[in-house]
Length: 67
Length: 266
Image 1 (tube, helix red, strand yellow):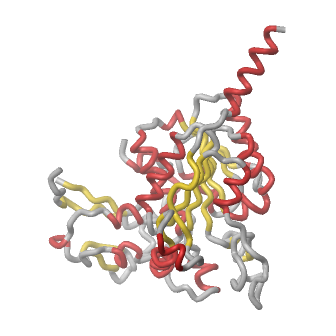
Image 2 (cartoon, chains in turn brown, green):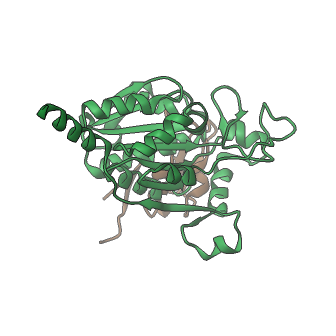
Image 3 (cartoon, one colour):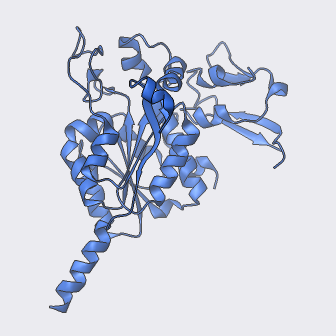
């Protein structure tokens, strides 16, 4: 199976509570919290689409779309 | 079907605290259901009372939000009348093992085809952080300001002893494994228990100085090992995760059908 490539991070800002679990566990340090404590993809070019953020997000606020 | 299509999105963002492990359990559960390709109409979720039990309000299955600890009794009724449905019962540690302890062991004993998910955060979160039967010795809680002296249960051992035919454990850190175990538990014909260690950063974490949600999850990585790991023999304090019991035994609804057939013969 070919490696999946990131197309886009879909982040629901209304659902995100800023717990930082995704930021903490991202193996490539892609995600950050903004000044409203909402997650955003600061370095999307580094994303390897492992979906660890999506799988662990307790607020179901992140979805990784792959190509 | 997309994951979000299984949700009642009008109730989101949900009421759980930031970093609550129960959200990750919901996430894993939805993944399991999606991977099994189940439709919303094939699933019934019955829950009791507590933070964990609020999960039934968020999923767009057939849902019942019932009495504290008694969700398994309601679920048993549903399953007996509609055995073709998949019945899932999410429970907190207090709901399952204190208030509903008796329902829990007898559901295990009957081996009725229900999937019980014990979301174990070791505290009563909704009511303000009182210790639960899963808190264990040396834990700080609102009702144990000088530390708890009550020993805790081992859900896996208890469910096994009571006769559950599928018993597994995972954590919110191991969310992928949790989803896989829930999937297998749903497929298993008989009573399945999946314990998922779930962090409560608001009460348990704060009172016991375990840090933020992510730190509590890191801890799950450190204190658990796969079933049968050599590390467990060296350090008995480690908690095993994986499948502990997976066996076949007569399922309750099928046995009941036989009784009906016998009675109809006169």
